[in-house]
Image 1 (tube, helix red, strand yellow):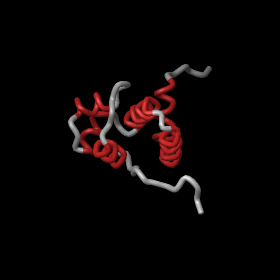
Image 2 (tube, rainbow, N blue to C red):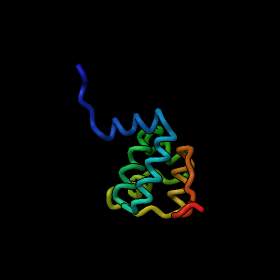
Image 3 (tube, helix red, strand yellow):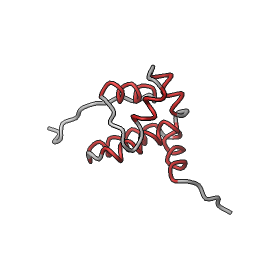
Image 4 (cartoon, helix red, strand yellow):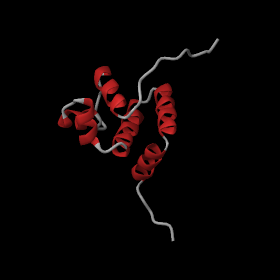
Length: 100
């Protein structure tokens, strides 16, 4: 029998098992420009990569501030976003809209 589990748990497992999928997912969220969806994805990814506390330690950010930053009302600064992504083994990049 299959066990029910929360969507966040399932997404965290996917991100943990396939970092390329996590990267692609974040790129799609960023392309859509939906900040609320980005924060949800970052919270799920933080869970996948050891939790907010561990990500805060690896990124040298204050854990309390990181919880606030990733909250539904959060507004991450570029510096924080880069640090969090780096702690997850990812980076922020810019790509042309229309490849030549």
